[in-house]
Image 1 (cartoon, helix red, strand yellow):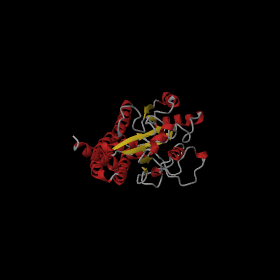
Image 2 (cartoon, one colour):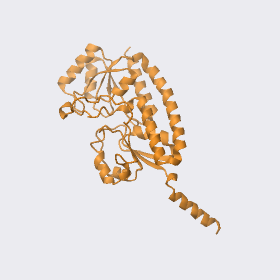
Image 3 (spheres, rainbow, N blue to C red):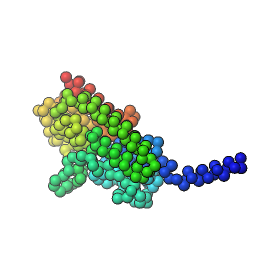
Image 4 (cartoon, rainbow, N blue to C red):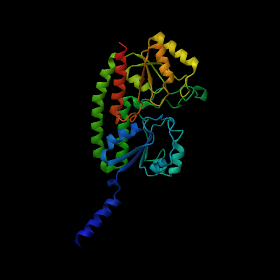
Length: 305
């Protein structure tokens, strides 16, 4: 027993002294990034998302508990493109965690390398509504960008935790293979509806629409982030009637009063479309996000026949 105790003590010291054996603490601004990180990181990481999938990612309550999470983070993954500009900077300042600031090893802007649409070519002003000056930040709604994000996360985790590189590479390969298979499935489901015109509540879906060959003909909001007005609502009603637009896509955190009123006058179907993992309990990962939205769209279109 006396010989055993020193050996056990030495083993414990090695475990405590070797950070590679501890889990990498990952904080993300969106549940989508946490879900992809979980798939790539597996048991070597722990994740926490600041914004829940059922919340508007533009408006996140800066809870004091977030400061603690950020202070302990080894890696921060953000959407970038100023999506988090309204709440994240003061949280980072109060966390006093320099290793997760922009430009530091523990910071990852998930938008880098992704296809970013709607980059403004003129100066952005408040008169234009909530227009993002660096492009539309809802880029993860294209599965091709999901693969770019997964690769970036795998590379960053391997940098922070070199001992886990083989695990991250293996998990990334599995994620990429499943995503390729699922993308073929999703593309096949959406193929019959290529060219379909849709109206959306907010301008959240340009990447989704481009990938699946939909045409976003208008928005319930007169300008991004501006509540519906009677005059603009009438314009949308006339547009839907003239173009025979079959569906209105609405994110779960917006009031359905105006979309439902438009649908009643036009016969269009209001479809709840979830932009993020966690929008409902059934959307547990990145694959379930597309499964849910695509099935909802297909069912709505079948109902219009």
